[in-house]
Image (cartoon, rainbow, N blue to C red; front, side):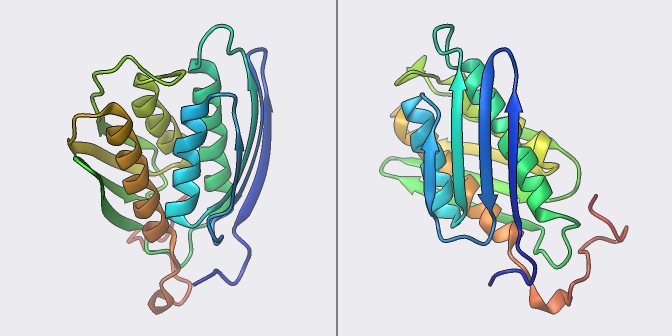
Length: 201
Protein backbone atom coordinates (compact mmCIF):
# COMPACT_ATOMS: atom_id res chain seq x y z
CA UNK A 1 0.00 0.00 0.00
CA UNK A 2 1.34 3.43 -0.93
CA UNK A 3 2.24 6.02 1.66
CA UNK A 4 -0.11 8.99 2.07
CA UNK A 5 2.79 11.27 1.16
CA UNK A 6 4.87 10.56 -1.94
CA UNK A 7 8.06 8.81 -0.94
CA UNK A 8 10.28 9.99 -3.76
CA UNK A 9 13.68 11.57 -4.20
CA UNK A 10 15.91 12.73 -7.01
CA UNK A 11 19.60 13.45 -6.48
CA UNK A 12 22.65 14.34 -8.53
CA UNK A 13 26.33 13.86 -7.75
CA UNK A 14 29.28 15.00 -9.80
CA UNK A 15 32.91 14.23 -9.04
CA UNK A 16 36.07 14.08 -11.13
CA UNK A 17 35.37 10.35 -11.53
CA UNK A 18 31.60 10.17 -12.10
CA UNK A 19 28.49 12.14 -13.02
CA UNK A 20 25.33 10.49 -11.71
CA UNK A 21 21.60 11.26 -11.50
CA UNK A 22 19.19 8.95 -9.65
CA UNK A 23 15.47 9.08 -8.99
CA UNK A 24 13.58 6.80 -6.60
CA UNK A 25 9.90 6.16 -5.96
CA UNK A 26 9.60 3.79 -3.01
CA UNK A 27 5.92 3.17 -3.76
CA UNK A 28 6.44 2.31 -7.40
CA UNK A 29 5.53 -0.50 -9.76
CA UNK A 30 8.96 -1.83 -10.68
CA UNK A 31 9.69 0.53 -13.55
CA UNK A 32 13.41 0.86 -14.26
CA UNK A 33 15.47 3.12 -16.49
CA UNK A 34 19.07 2.16 -15.76
CA UNK A 35 22.14 3.22 -17.74
CA UNK A 36 25.46 3.05 -15.92
CA UNK A 37 27.74 1.87 -18.70
CA UNK A 38 28.32 -1.35 -16.72
CA UNK A 39 26.01 -3.98 -18.15
CA UNK A 40 25.92 -6.37 -15.21
CA UNK A 41 25.34 -3.53 -12.75
CA UNK A 42 22.39 -2.42 -14.89
CA UNK A 43 21.08 -5.98 -14.71
CA UNK A 44 21.34 -6.09 -10.91
CA UNK A 45 19.66 -2.69 -10.47
CA UNK A 46 16.88 -3.69 -12.83
CA UNK A 47 16.31 -6.72 -10.59
CA UNK A 48 16.12 -4.45 -7.53
CA UNK A 49 13.45 -2.31 -9.19
CA UNK A 50 11.38 -5.21 -10.44
CA UNK A 51 11.55 -7.42 -7.35
CA UNK A 52 11.26 -4.54 -4.87
CA UNK A 53 8.55 -2.78 -6.91
CA UNK A 54 10.54 0.44 -6.77
CA UNK A 55 10.62 2.89 -9.65
CA UNK A 56 14.31 3.58 -10.29
CA UNK A 57 16.07 5.88 -12.70
CA UNK A 58 19.86 5.75 -12.75
CA UNK A 59 21.95 7.63 -15.30
CA UNK A 60 25.69 7.40 -14.75
CA UNK A 61 28.80 8.42 -16.61
CA UNK A 62 32.05 7.23 -15.06
CA UNK A 63 35.73 6.64 -15.67
CA UNK A 64 35.18 3.17 -17.09
CA UNK A 65 38.52 3.39 -18.84
CA UNK A 66 39.95 2.81 -15.34
CA UNK A 67 37.51 0.11 -14.20
CA UNK A 68 33.97 -0.29 -12.86
CA UNK A 69 34.77 0.52 -9.24
CA UNK A 70 34.13 4.28 -9.10
CA UNK A 71 30.92 4.07 -11.12
CA UNK A 72 29.42 1.22 -9.09
CA UNK A 73 30.47 2.72 -5.76
CA UNK A 74 29.14 6.20 -6.55
CA UNK A 75 25.84 4.82 -7.84
CA UNK A 76 25.48 2.91 -4.55
CA UNK A 77 26.25 6.03 -2.52
CA UNK A 78 23.76 8.21 -4.35
CA UNK A 79 21.05 5.55 -4.50
CA UNK A 80 21.38 4.97 -0.75
CA UNK A 81 21.08 8.70 -0.10
CA UNK A 82 18.00 8.87 -2.33
CA UNK A 83 16.29 6.08 -0.39
CA UNK A 84 17.19 7.79 2.88
CA UNK A 85 15.65 11.04 1.65
CA UNK A 86 12.57 9.36 0.17
CA UNK A 87 11.81 7.52 3.42
CA UNK A 88 11.84 10.77 5.41
CA UNK A 89 11.20 10.26 9.13
CA UNK A 90 10.25 6.59 8.57
CA UNK A 91 6.84 6.99 10.20
CA UNK A 92 4.62 3.94 9.88
CA UNK A 93 7.13 1.67 8.14
CA UNK A 94 7.45 -2.01 8.98
CA UNK A 95 11.17 -1.31 9.55
CA UNK A 96 12.52 -4.89 9.86
CA UNK A 97 12.16 -7.58 7.20
CA UNK A 98 13.94 -10.48 5.59
CA UNK A 99 13.71 -12.37 2.32
CA UNK A 100 15.17 -15.44 0.66
CA UNK A 101 15.61 -15.60 -3.10
CA UNK A 102 16.66 -18.58 -5.23
CA UNK A 103 18.05 -18.58 -8.75
CA UNK A 104 18.43 -22.13 -9.99
CA UNK A 105 21.21 -23.64 -7.83
CA UNK A 106 21.86 -20.36 -5.96
CA UNK A 107 20.12 -19.21 -2.79
CA UNK A 108 20.52 -15.93 -0.91
CA UNK A 109 19.18 -14.29 2.24
CA UNK A 110 18.89 -10.60 3.10
CA UNK A 111 17.77 -9.13 6.44
CA UNK A 112 17.12 -5.39 6.77
CA UNK A 113 16.49 -3.07 9.69
CA UNK A 114 15.80 0.52 8.65
CA UNK A 115 17.34 1.61 11.90
CA UNK A 116 18.78 5.03 11.11
CA UNK A 117 22.25 3.50 11.46
CA UNK A 118 24.24 2.45 8.43
CA UNK A 119 25.87 -0.94 8.84
CA UNK A 120 26.41 -4.04 6.69
CA UNK A 121 27.59 -7.61 7.11
CA UNK A 122 27.74 -9.30 3.73
CA UNK A 123 28.98 -12.81 3.02
CA UNK A 124 28.92 -13.21 -0.74
CA UNK A 125 32.07 -14.80 -2.12
CA UNK A 126 32.13 -15.08 -5.90
CA UNK A 127 34.92 -17.09 -7.48
CA UNK A 128 34.85 -15.32 -10.83
CA UNK A 129 36.90 -12.10 -10.72
CA UNK A 130 34.59 -10.36 -13.19
CA UNK A 131 30.87 -10.53 -13.96
CA UNK A 132 30.78 -9.03 -17.40
CA UNK A 133 32.63 -5.74 -16.90
CA UNK A 134 31.75 -5.52 -13.19
CA UNK A 135 34.46 -6.39 -10.66
CA UNK A 136 32.75 -9.18 -8.70
CA UNK A 137 33.84 -7.69 -5.34
CA UNK A 138 31.59 -4.74 -6.17
CA UNK A 139 28.56 -6.96 -5.49
CA UNK A 140 29.49 -6.90 -1.82
CA UNK A 141 30.82 -3.35 -1.84
CA UNK A 142 27.74 -1.94 -3.60
CA UNK A 143 25.36 -3.31 -0.98
CA UNK A 144 27.57 -2.19 1.90
CA UNK A 145 27.85 1.34 0.49
CA UNK A 146 24.10 1.51 -0.08
CA UNK A 147 23.39 0.40 3.50
CA UNK A 148 25.65 3.05 5.01
CA UNK A 149 24.15 5.87 2.94
CA UNK A 150 20.55 4.69 3.35
CA UNK A 151 21.12 4.50 7.12
CA UNK A 152 19.95 0.93 7.44
CA UNK A 153 21.38 -2.29 8.81
CA UNK A 154 21.85 -5.02 6.22
CA UNK A 155 22.86 -8.62 6.78
CA UNK A 156 23.13 -10.51 3.50
CA UNK A 157 24.47 -13.92 2.66
CA UNK A 158 24.75 -16.21 -0.33
CA UNK A 159 23.78 -19.60 1.06
CA UNK A 160 24.33 -21.78 -2.02
CA UNK A 161 25.31 -21.65 -5.65
CA UNK A 162 28.10 -22.37 -8.09
CA UNK A 163 27.59 -19.76 -10.81
CA UNK A 164 28.73 -16.23 -9.98
CA UNK A 165 25.99 -14.59 -12.03
CA UNK A 166 23.35 -16.62 -10.19
CA UNK A 167 24.88 -15.93 -6.78
CA UNK A 168 25.00 -12.18 -7.34
CA UNK A 169 21.53 -11.93 -8.85
CA UNK A 170 19.95 -14.06 -6.12
CA UNK A 171 21.54 -11.78 -3.52
CA UNK A 172 20.20 -8.60 -5.14
CA UNK A 173 16.74 -10.13 -5.51
CA UNK A 174 16.69 -11.09 -1.82
CA UNK A 175 17.89 -7.57 -0.96
CA UNK A 176 15.14 -6.02 -3.09
CA UNK A 177 12.36 -8.09 -1.55
CA UNK A 178 13.60 -7.45 2.00
CA UNK A 179 13.88 -3.71 1.30
CA UNK A 180 10.37 -3.67 -0.15
CA UNK A 181 8.95 -5.42 2.92
CA UNK A 182 10.85 -3.21 5.38
CA UNK A 183 9.73 0.03 3.71
CA UNK A 184 6.05 -0.92 3.52
CA UNK A 185 3.59 1.15 5.52
CA UNK A 186 1.98 -0.83 8.35
CA UNK A 187 -1.43 0.73 8.99
CA UNK A 188 -1.52 -0.71 12.51
CA UNK A 189 1.23 1.73 13.47
CA UNK A 190 -1.09 4.64 12.64
CA UNK A 191 1.85 6.75 11.52
CA UNK A 192 4.01 6.06 14.58
CA UNK A 193 7.75 5.54 14.35
CA UNK A 194 8.50 1.85 15.10
CA UNK A 195 11.20 2.49 17.69
CA UNK A 196 11.37 2.62 21.49
CA UNK A 197 13.45 5.78 21.01
CA UNK A 198 10.67 7.48 19.07
CA UNK A 199 12.96 8.23 16.13
CA UNK A 200 14.76 6.41 13.35
CA UNK A 201 16.76 9.42 12.23
